[in-house]
Length: 80
Image (cartoon, rainbow, N blue to C red; front, side):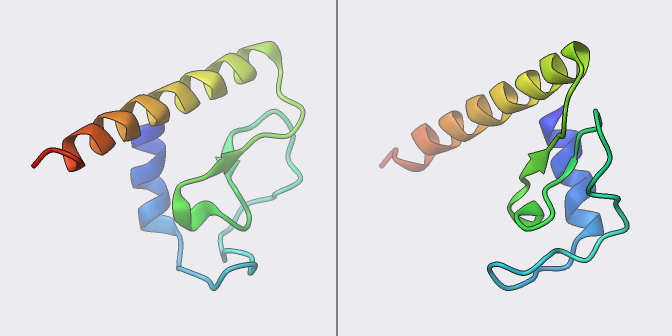
């Protein structure tokens, strides 16, 4: 899930300045695997190269979960 992925990212990454590659032990050329984004992982972004149908569906589910979570957070943060 997106939340599990975000928690894992938080423990792995070290913040880098904008435009710099995050220092992690990942092969960013690996195919069909959801991995942290090489530049934007510090913002909990993920990426996948050449996903299979299953991986693409898993990735879409993560994106939807992230969207739903942030939508709820935005609604809560706007309450007086």
